[in-house]
Amino acid sequence: MIQKILDIGIRANMPIPEQRKRRLLNFLAAVLLSIQPFAIILYVFEPNLWGIFFALLDGLSSGLILYFQFKGKFSTARIFLFVYYPLSLFIQIIALITPEIQLFWVTGLIGTSFLFDESSRLRKVFYVYIGTLMICSYTYMNYQSIKTSPTIEQLFSLLFTSGVVALLCISTYKILSFFIQNTEYFQKQTEEKNQEILRQNEEITQQAEYLEDMNKMKDRLFSIIAHDLRNPVVALRNTIDILDPNVLTTKELAVIKAELLKQFNGVDFTMNNLLTWTRGQMIGESISRESVNLWEVVESNAKLFETQLKTKELILVNCIPQGTEVYADLNHVRFVVRNLVNNAIKFSEKENVITIFSVEKQESIEIGIRDKGMGISKEKQKKLFNIQTNYSTEGTAGERGTGLGLILCQEFIEKNGGKIWVESEIGKGSTFYFTLPKNETYQTLSLDKT
Image (cartoon, rainbow, N blue to C red; front, side, top):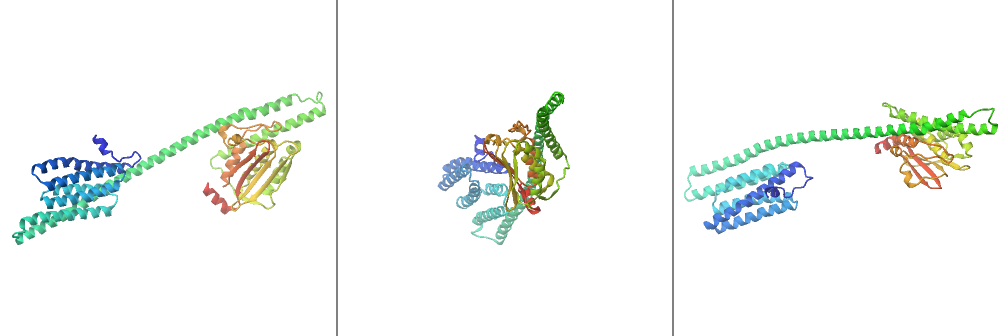
């Protein structure tokens, strides 16, 4: 029962200091409420109607304070208690001539010292308020005994005692303020240490998550090496085993040569991606950003894919205006364009067109690589840039991929302050977009946003 009263208005998400203040206020209100029945009984036996009235009013006020607490109106309850109750005691001292100054004093000090510690101005105001009421009540009580025939000694004693009371009020305020400030200082130190511990725990958690991700990535790479890289090597070996110019015709040798070239290109591309990823994971890898001519990058990549384009009878159209530049790492840009063009070739049907274009934005250049191939479903699009999904698929001519290329494309684009995404529809082809900053100023802004 007592614990339930102390917990009125307490919420689990409240700071500990706030919970303590509310429990203290509940305790004071409960004590004041529990005293009133005894006061009523005493005033009934006297009898004293004014005493009964004030006791009932004090009890009602204490209940009202607990109600405010229950409704979450802590400030209202706090101010009500420490404005009303000292004033009530002051009136009772004058009206009933009862020496309740000690209770008056303790109530005021507890309230101002602990429940108003977040605002020194309020604390001072209430100390002045309580001190004034104390001096007035003490003066009134003593004045009743000397008002008939006061002597100089009695008046001097009254003034001296009133001064002592005022001095006690000020001294008590200073002493309690000192202890409260020290308490708050040590509490702040404790909170700062707790925050530091929480920050360190968060860092440890992040490091653990990072290590877990790296472990999953390692498993993914082993899977790539064991499956996607091993299969083409086996196919190469089997093809070489059947090569015999005395048995095979010229036409058959041409077919085998084309197959060997396709298998070799697949292995070469996968090896390059793996080496690029490994280099990117090394500590201290430097990124050298500069102005890069996009048109020239696309043209140089087009020459690399001449054989594959000719084999599938595809046309690569470079629609990027000459002189279009971005501010990025040249090797990263080459890698991204090479991988996206390779994917477009892989998933395009014969006699189709692959278009590379750009759109100038306010702060960046948006580049698109569009094919009219197989297309990608919405469900599979979500797996493209996630190394954990282990997503890869065969091209229109049975080309194999690892899915690692797109992961690296995303990593390189983001390192250079851009973003990458895909728009695709089954049977209608795909367009891979990525953005890069136009110059050094926008590159810095883009990195700040990321």
